[in-house]
Length: 316
Figure 1 (tube, rainbow, N blue to C red):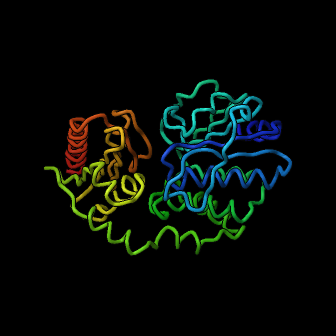
Figure 2 (figure 1 turned 60 degrees about the vertical axis):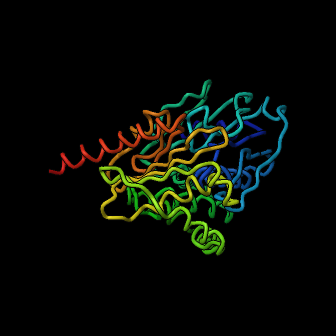
Figure 3 (figure 1 turned 30 degrees about the vertical axis):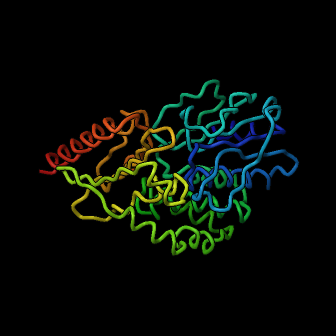
Protein backbone atom coordinates (compact mmCIF):
# COMPACT_ATOMS: atom_id res chain seq x y z
CA UNK A 1 0.00 0.00 0.00
CA UNK A 2 2.87 2.42 0.72
CA UNK A 3 3.89 2.44 -2.95
CA UNK A 4 0.32 3.32 -3.95
CA UNK A 5 0.25 6.09 -1.35
CA UNK A 6 3.46 7.62 -2.69
CA UNK A 7 2.11 7.41 -6.24
CA UNK A 8 -1.14 9.11 -5.24
CA UNK A 9 0.77 11.89 -3.47
CA UNK A 10 2.89 12.40 -6.58
CA UNK A 11 -0.21 12.72 -8.76
CA UNK A 12 -1.79 15.69 -6.94
CA UNK A 13 -0.76 19.33 -7.19
CA UNK A 14 -2.55 20.40 -3.99
CA UNK A 15 -2.27 18.42 -0.74
CA UNK A 16 -4.00 19.36 2.52
CA UNK A 17 -2.97 17.62 5.74
CA UNK A 18 -5.37 17.18 8.66
CA UNK A 19 -5.12 15.47 12.08
CA UNK A 20 -7.25 15.23 15.21
CA UNK A 21 -8.55 18.19 17.19
CA UNK A 22 -7.00 19.13 20.54
CA UNK A 23 -3.71 17.85 19.18
CA UNK A 24 -0.87 16.27 21.08
CA UNK A 25 2.67 16.35 19.73
CA UNK A 26 2.23 13.16 17.71
CA UNK A 27 -0.72 14.71 15.88
CA UNK A 28 1.15 17.98 15.31
CA UNK A 29 4.44 16.20 14.62
CA UNK A 30 3.00 13.83 12.02
CA UNK A 31 1.06 16.63 10.31
CA UNK A 32 3.80 19.27 10.22
CA UNK A 33 6.58 16.74 9.80
CA UNK A 34 4.82 15.24 6.78
CA UNK A 35 4.15 18.70 5.34
CA UNK A 36 7.81 19.70 5.60
CA UNK A 37 8.91 16.34 4.21
CA UNK A 38 6.62 16.65 1.16
CA UNK A 39 7.54 20.29 0.58
CA UNK A 40 11.18 19.24 0.51
CA UNK A 41 10.65 16.50 -2.07
CA UNK A 42 7.90 18.22 -4.08
CA UNK A 43 8.85 21.92 -4.06
CA UNK A 44 6.40 22.79 -6.85
CA UNK A 45 3.33 21.37 -5.08
CA UNK A 46 1.01 23.43 -2.89
CA UNK A 47 0.82 21.82 0.56
CA UNK A 48 -1.29 23.05 3.48
CA UNK A 49 -1.75 22.04 7.13
CA UNK A 50 -5.01 22.97 8.87
CA UNK A 51 -6.62 22.63 12.29
CA UNK A 52 -6.73 23.97 15.82
CA UNK A 53 -3.66 24.66 17.95
CA UNK A 54 -2.86 24.69 21.66
CA UNK A 55 0.10 24.92 24.00
CA UNK A 56 1.16 21.38 23.07
CA UNK A 57 1.73 22.37 19.42
CA UNK A 58 5.47 23.20 19.68
CA UNK A 59 6.14 26.00 17.14
CA UNK A 60 3.53 24.91 14.59
CA UNK A 61 1.42 27.33 12.60
CA UNK A 62 -1.61 26.38 10.52
CA UNK A 63 -2.78 27.62 7.13
CA UNK A 64 -6.03 29.53 6.60
CA UNK A 65 -7.50 28.33 3.30
CA UNK A 66 -10.77 28.67 1.36
CA UNK A 67 -13.11 25.77 0.65
CA UNK A 68 -12.20 25.99 -3.04
CA UNK A 69 -8.69 24.72 -2.25
CA UNK A 70 -10.17 21.30 -1.53
CA UNK A 71 -12.02 20.62 -4.75
CA UNK A 72 -9.10 19.14 -6.70
CA UNK A 73 -6.96 18.32 -3.68
CA UNK A 74 -5.68 15.24 -1.93
CA UNK A 75 -6.29 15.21 1.82
CA UNK A 76 -4.00 13.24 4.14
CA UNK A 77 -5.32 12.65 7.66
CA UNK A 78 -2.74 11.64 10.26
CA UNK A 79 -3.07 10.16 13.74
CA UNK A 80 -6.85 9.72 13.64
CA UNK A 81 -9.41 7.65 11.74
CA UNK A 82 -12.63 8.66 13.53
CA UNK A 83 -14.60 11.29 11.63
CA UNK A 84 -15.83 13.42 14.53
CA UNK A 85 -12.30 13.78 15.91
CA UNK A 86 -10.76 15.25 12.75
CA UNK A 87 -9.94 18.93 13.13
CA UNK A 88 -11.70 20.85 10.32
CA UNK A 89 -14.35 18.72 8.65
CA UNK A 90 -13.74 20.18 5.20
CA UNK A 91 -11.67 17.09 4.40
CA UNK A 92 -14.96 15.77 3.00
CA UNK A 93 -14.66 18.27 0.11
CA UNK A 94 -11.42 16.78 -1.23
CA UNK A 95 -11.12 14.71 -4.37
CA UNK A 96 -9.24 11.89 -2.58
CA UNK A 97 -8.37 10.95 1.00
CA UNK A 98 -5.55 9.04 2.69
CA UNK A 99 -5.52 8.05 6.37
CA UNK A 100 -2.30 7.25 8.25
CA UNK A 101 -3.12 6.03 11.75
CA UNK A 102 -1.69 3.77 14.43
CA UNK A 103 -4.68 3.66 16.80
CA UNK A 104 -6.83 0.59 17.35
CA UNK A 105 -9.99 2.15 15.92
CA UNK A 106 -11.74 1.36 12.67
CA UNK A 107 -12.31 4.37 10.44
CA UNK A 108 -15.68 6.11 10.24
CA UNK A 109 -14.43 8.44 7.48
CA UNK A 110 -16.18 7.83 4.17
CA UNK A 111 -14.72 7.52 0.66
CA UNK A 112 -11.14 6.85 1.72
CA UNK A 113 -8.78 6.00 -1.13
CA UNK A 114 -6.09 4.44 1.09
CA UNK A 115 -6.49 3.60 4.78
CA UNK A 116 -3.04 2.80 6.14
CA UNK A 117 -3.56 1.52 9.68
CA UNK A 118 -0.83 -0.26 11.62
CA UNK A 119 -1.26 -0.59 15.37
CA UNK A 120 2.22 -2.09 15.79
CA UNK A 121 3.67 1.43 15.57
CA UNK A 122 3.92 3.55 18.71
CA UNK A 123 3.09 6.77 16.90
CA UNK A 124 1.93 8.25 13.62
CA UNK A 125 5.30 10.00 13.43
CA UNK A 126 6.99 6.61 13.56
CA UNK A 127 4.87 5.49 10.59
CA UNK A 128 6.00 8.50 8.56
CA UNK A 129 9.67 7.97 9.43
CA UNK A 130 9.24 4.34 8.41
CA UNK A 131 7.79 5.44 5.08
CA UNK A 132 10.71 7.83 4.55
CA UNK A 133 13.25 5.13 5.37
CA UNK A 134 11.60 2.53 3.09
CA UNK A 135 11.76 4.91 0.13
CA UNK A 136 15.19 6.28 1.08
CA UNK A 137 13.84 9.82 1.51
CA UNK A 138 16.04 12.34 3.27
CA UNK A 139 14.21 14.37 5.91
CA UNK A 140 14.74 18.13 6.30
CA UNK A 141 15.83 19.25 9.76
CA UNK A 142 12.52 20.89 10.74
CA UNK A 143 10.54 17.82 9.67
CA UNK A 144 12.96 15.59 11.57
CA UNK A 145 12.44 17.66 14.73
CA UNK A 146 8.64 17.34 14.59
CA UNK A 147 8.74 13.63 13.73
CA UNK A 148 11.24 12.86 16.49
CA UNK A 149 9.05 14.82 18.93
CA UNK A 150 6.00 12.71 18.14
CA UNK A 151 8.02 9.52 18.52
CA UNK A 152 9.33 10.61 21.92
CA UNK A 153 6.03 11.74 23.39
CA UNK A 154 3.72 8.99 22.13
CA UNK A 155 6.11 6.33 23.43
CA UNK A 156 6.44 7.97 26.84
CA UNK A 157 10.11 8.82 26.17
CA UNK A 158 10.61 5.34 24.69
CA UNK A 159 9.12 3.64 27.75
CA UNK A 160 6.09 2.02 26.07
CA UNK A 161 7.39 0.18 23.02
CA UNK A 162 5.63 -2.38 20.85
CA UNK A 163 8.57 -3.30 18.63
CA UNK A 164 11.66 -1.81 20.32
CA UNK A 165 14.16 -2.89 17.67
CA UNK A 166 12.19 -1.16 14.90
CA UNK A 167 11.49 1.93 17.01
CA UNK A 168 15.14 2.52 17.79
CA UNK A 169 16.09 1.83 14.17
CA UNK A 170 13.64 4.53 13.07
CA UNK A 171 14.83 6.88 15.82
CA UNK A 172 18.36 6.35 14.52
CA UNK A 173 17.24 7.06 10.96
CA UNK A 174 15.49 10.32 11.77
CA UNK A 175 18.43 11.36 13.97
CA UNK A 176 20.68 11.27 10.90
CA UNK A 177 18.94 14.45 9.77
CA UNK A 178 19.87 16.42 12.91
CA UNK A 179 16.55 17.14 14.63
CA UNK A 180 16.80 20.02 17.09
CA UNK A 181 16.51 17.78 20.13
CA UNK A 182 17.63 20.39 22.66
CA UNK A 183 15.02 22.90 21.51
CA UNK A 184 12.38 20.17 21.52
CA UNK A 185 13.31 18.96 25.01
CA UNK A 186 13.45 22.50 26.36
CA UNK A 187 9.90 22.91 25.08
CA UNK A 188 8.71 19.61 26.53
CA UNK A 189 10.49 19.54 29.88
CA UNK A 190 10.93 23.13 31.00
CA UNK A 191 8.12 25.50 31.88
CA UNK A 192 7.49 28.97 33.30
CA UNK A 193 7.35 29.33 37.07
CA UNK A 194 3.67 30.34 36.86
CA UNK A 195 2.73 27.06 35.17
CA UNK A 196 4.76 25.10 37.69
CA UNK A 197 2.77 26.79 40.44
CA UNK A 198 -0.52 26.06 38.64
CA UNK A 199 0.36 22.36 38.81
CA UNK A 200 0.02 22.56 42.59
CA UNK A 201 -3.72 23.05 42.07
CA UNK A 202 -3.89 19.73 40.22
CA UNK A 203 -1.54 17.63 42.32
CA UNK A 204 -4.25 16.29 44.65
CA UNK A 205 -6.52 13.43 43.58
CA UNK A 206 -9.13 10.95 44.74
CA UNK A 207 -8.81 7.17 44.95
CA UNK A 208 -11.47 4.59 44.19
CA UNK A 209 -11.75 1.44 46.29
CA UNK A 210 -9.41 -0.30 43.82
CA UNK A 211 -6.87 2.53 43.96
CA UNK A 212 -7.75 4.06 40.62
CA UNK A 213 -6.54 7.65 40.97
CA UNK A 214 -8.67 10.40 39.43
CA UNK A 215 -9.40 14.11 39.30
CA UNK A 216 -12.55 15.89 38.13
CA UNK A 217 -11.69 19.39 36.89
CA UNK A 218 -14.55 21.88 36.62
CA UNK A 219 -14.72 24.38 33.79
CA UNK A 220 -14.56 27.17 36.39
CA UNK A 221 -11.29 25.85 37.79
CA UNK A 222 -9.77 25.38 34.34
CA UNK A 223 -10.69 28.91 33.30
CA UNK A 224 -9.26 30.35 36.52
CA UNK A 225 -5.79 29.09 35.64
CA UNK A 226 -5.54 31.09 32.42
CA UNK A 227 -4.25 27.94 30.68
CA UNK A 228 -5.87 26.47 27.59
CA UNK A 229 -8.09 23.41 28.00
CA UNK A 230 -5.66 20.86 26.58
CA UNK A 231 -2.83 21.89 28.89
CA UNK A 232 -5.05 20.97 31.85
CA UNK A 233 -6.96 18.00 30.45
CA UNK A 234 -3.98 16.17 28.98
CA UNK A 235 -1.13 18.14 30.49
CA UNK A 236 -1.94 17.40 34.13
CA UNK A 237 -3.05 13.76 34.00
CA UNK A 238 0.38 12.29 34.64
CA UNK A 239 0.75 14.14 37.92
CA UNK A 240 -0.90 10.95 39.20
CA UNK A 241 1.65 8.66 37.53
CA UNK A 242 4.50 6.80 39.17
CA UNK A 243 2.67 5.74 42.34
CA UNK A 244 3.27 2.11 43.23
CA UNK A 245 -0.24 1.42 44.47
CA UNK A 246 -1.93 3.15 41.52
CA UNK A 247 -2.17 0.99 38.41
CA UNK A 248 -4.70 3.17 36.54
CA UNK A 249 -5.28 6.90 36.69
CA UNK A 250 -7.36 9.44 34.83
CA UNK A 251 -8.49 13.05 34.65
CA UNK A 252 -11.99 14.23 33.75
CA UNK A 253 -12.09 17.84 32.61
CA UNK A 254 -15.31 19.74 31.96
CA UNK A 255 -15.26 21.53 28.61
CA UNK A 256 -17.18 24.62 27.52
CA UNK A 257 -20.14 22.43 26.48
CA UNK A 258 -20.46 20.80 29.89
CA UNK A 259 -19.02 17.49 28.69
CA UNK A 260 -16.18 15.70 30.46
CA UNK A 261 -13.02 14.89 28.52
CA UNK A 262 -11.52 11.73 29.97
CA UNK A 263 -7.76 11.20 29.77
CA UNK A 264 -6.99 7.64 30.92
CA UNK A 265 -3.60 6.10 31.66
CA UNK A 266 -2.31 2.83 33.10
CA UNK A 267 1.05 1.32 33.90
CA UNK A 268 0.40 -2.25 32.78
CA UNK A 269 -3.32 -2.97 32.41
CA UNK A 270 -4.85 -2.51 28.91
CA UNK A 271 -7.69 0.01 29.21
CA UNK A 272 -8.47 1.09 25.65
CA UNK A 273 -11.57 -1.12 25.57
CA UNK A 274 -13.03 0.98 28.39
CA UNK A 275 -12.43 4.16 26.37
CA UNK A 276 -14.05 2.54 23.32
CA UNK A 277 -17.13 1.63 25.38
CA UNK A 278 -17.71 5.37 25.81
CA UNK A 279 -17.06 6.28 22.18
CA UNK A 280 -13.36 7.01 22.54
CA UNK A 281 -10.16 5.14 21.84
CA UNK A 282 -6.40 5.45 21.65
CA UNK A 283 -3.56 3.27 22.87
CA UNK A 284 -3.68 0.20 25.10
CA UNK A 285 -2.39 2.14 28.12
CA UNK A 286 -3.14 5.76 27.13
CA UNK A 287 -6.54 6.65 25.73
CA UNK A 288 -9.53 8.91 26.16
CA UNK A 289 -13.20 9.56 25.60
CA UNK A 290 -15.81 12.30 25.79
CA UNK A 291 -18.45 11.77 28.47
CA UNK A 292 -21.83 13.46 28.59
CA UNK A 293 -22.43 13.59 32.36
CA UNK A 294 -20.85 13.15 35.78
CA UNK A 295 -22.82 9.92 36.06
CA UNK A 296 -20.88 8.65 33.04
CA UNK A 297 -17.64 9.65 34.75
CA UNK A 298 -18.44 7.55 37.81
CA UNK A 299 -19.62 4.62 35.68
CA UNK A 300 -16.35 4.71 33.76
CA UNK A 301 -14.44 4.73 37.05
CA UNK A 302 -16.34 1.63 38.11
CA UNK A 303 -15.33 -0.02 34.82
CA UNK A 304 -11.71 0.82 35.64
CA UNK A 305 -12.19 -0.69 39.11
CA UNK A 306 -13.32 -3.87 37.38
CA UNK A 307 -10.20 -3.80 35.23
CA UNK A 308 -8.02 -3.73 38.35
CA UNK A 309 -9.99 -6.53 40.00
CA UNK A 310 -9.73 -8.75 36.93
CA UNK A 311 -6.02 -8.04 36.65
CA UNK A 312 -5.45 -8.93 40.30
CA UNK A 313 -7.37 -12.20 39.87
CA UNK A 314 -5.24 -13.07 36.86
CA UNK A 315 -2.01 -12.40 38.78
CA UNK A 316 -3.18 -14.39 41.77
